[in-house]
Length: 96
Image (cartoon, rainbow, N blue to C red; front, side):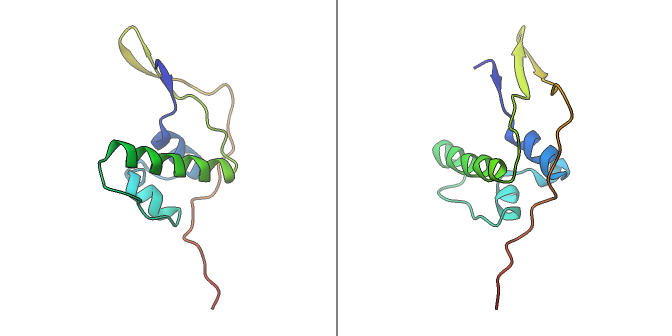
């Protein structure tokens, strides 16, 4: 894979949150989700990242490739145009 979507970058840009709010458990928590599985398990981390990506798509995010390897160097891929972001995620509100 020479191109990919860095979900942390996409999440931070879309929801307009600082980088310190883009750790996996914090992203899940801010979206009203809990971590499923064992922390630091590659498979479980991947499933949780997929859950975040699905939620972002549901919220209207246009996920795009944002990183690539070129000549052995990590490079950021800029978008072709400005993307509208969504407001920061809110914890679900429950009716009493």
